[in-house]
Image (tube, rainbow, N blue to C red; front, side, top):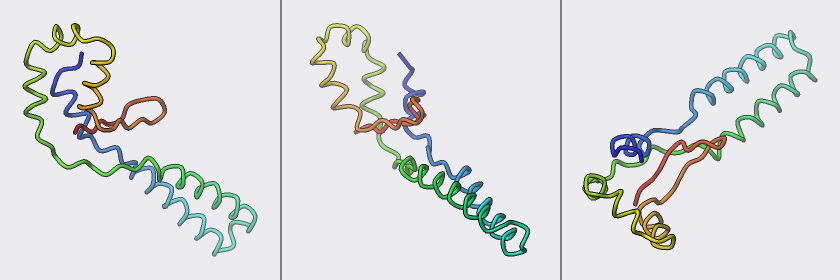
Length: 119
């Protein structure tokens, strides 16, 4: 089981893909300049423009605002207690209830958890 600090760090890590978005917007600007200067044929411009816009649209749903700092004192107290042995005594339904009442959202990108929001 991860340590408390690792869990908190993962939950507050920004998952905004702003660098990639900025890079794609820069490419859009470059191809526009090339097209305006007649250095890029109209068909190539259209293809490149559509490709970049598609990539930008795919990034939109995964943009996540940085969550507000939350008070994790109760979570820390739980993790500092004899959590492992207590957790082992729970049946499957109780474990499900525990996690459902502790974690509000997971953020997943390409099969990897990129962030966690706690209640």
